[in-house]
Image (tube, rainbow, N blue to C red; front, side, top):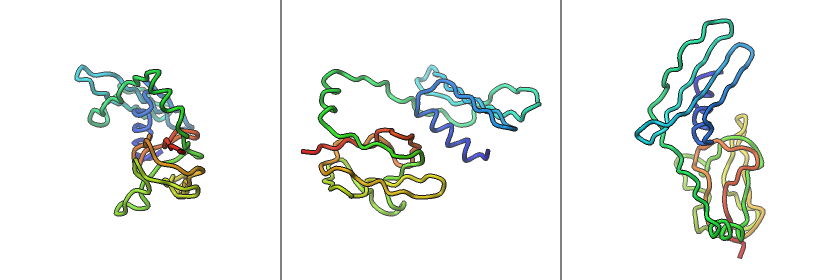
Length: 162
């Protein structure tokens, strides 16, 4: 496992809100712990231990990451979202909202879309997959940041079909 894969894993764990993730492979054991710091930030720790060696104490690997805001969902917000269609990720990978770094985003909040329009691209195993809309309507909310890891069936966009 190289450093880029570890960094991607750290970012994913930080965004997921998990407090601890352990990953064991043939020759490597990784433990990622997130814990609150008094300043309100979240710090991520990584341990990479080759099997058969003594375990070393965890060391901070990067500067503190902002804590995701707590989900404060009210009944009215849930009712409002119920009238929208949720576009979900069909695969696991990294979501990109732009065709390339120097181009504008495929869609923004308020964009009118038609069935078949490309909403974003998800990179999986070095392949870029266009994610097309299955409905026509207007983008109401974008639920994922550019260059973020996404899971299968993770909500990406809310679309108002009216």
